[in-house]
Image (cartoon, rainbow, N blue to C red; front, side, top):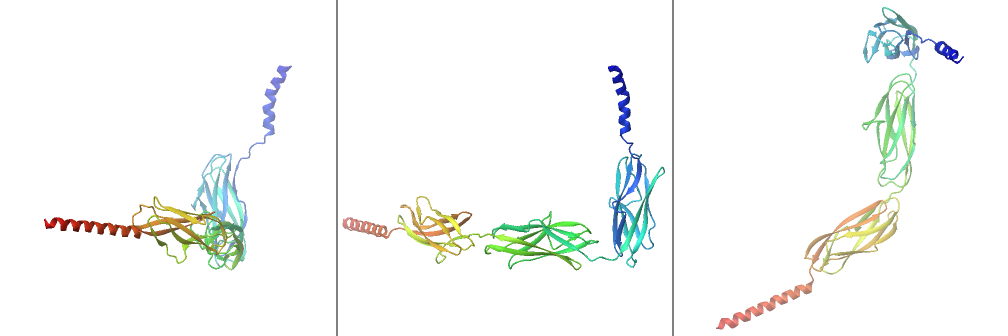
Length: 384
């Protein structure tokens, strides 16, 4: 019994599987997504279609267009050039285009055109209805993915916008932006770096563009809108983007009179008054003073740390520099710096070092004594 059932399964199962699967459709077709389309007088229109081979042996198929109205020009393109035949492989298709040029004086109306592909063994046709319509007004759309960005005055604000050509013809779209005074605006392509002022967009298509907005360094904290506008042939679309600018402190280390130089004596402390200024738009916090001086020298600050410095606030800091005891008279450079969270400022200070006047007087005394001893010796031994 088991052997009988096994034998029946071997015989019947393949037959049942073959009956369950419908036979593959074979044939040759010309196909397009939109067999009825509008064209415009005085312009060239392109209709995309393909030649499909389903399960047939490949053969060369001659391409032609029938029913072209008088004065029209129709060409079949493949791979960007005019073609007269195509040969799709078995189970494959060939993408083609029909380019139609309509005379300027063509009256509105519908026209029937037939695409044909014919070989020795088989042929196929595709009927198209091309309607000459009056020009519809241009229509544009403009959208931003992130219309509001936050940053500091040093940030570069970059927005991606999608420009849509919602009209029935290709357009060259002009780009412009209106923002606060001294804000710099530049447009680039969505995936490029070249600056642009306009961009071509095909009918019914969209393209991404980027606008980069650079605020001035001294701008105050707040929200700043920029109106982006696109236009073409009387049609316009607008989108507002916003820069949310937070405050940014900016440290500056200098002196009262701006003169970065002073005098000092060897081995003696010299005090210099420095001025810390915050000319930014936000407070600067956790400020620390430090300095770099020649080897053997000392430098101290009073105060060494400041908790914060408000916008447009100034504070004096005393820098105490002590040259080394064995320093040679001359000019030296000390570097003073103030650092805070996210901010820093440096100032190079020239120090002219002189020796003590006491040592100068002592040196003159020694020289005078030596001269007296020398004169005495000359007088004593000169008599002999």
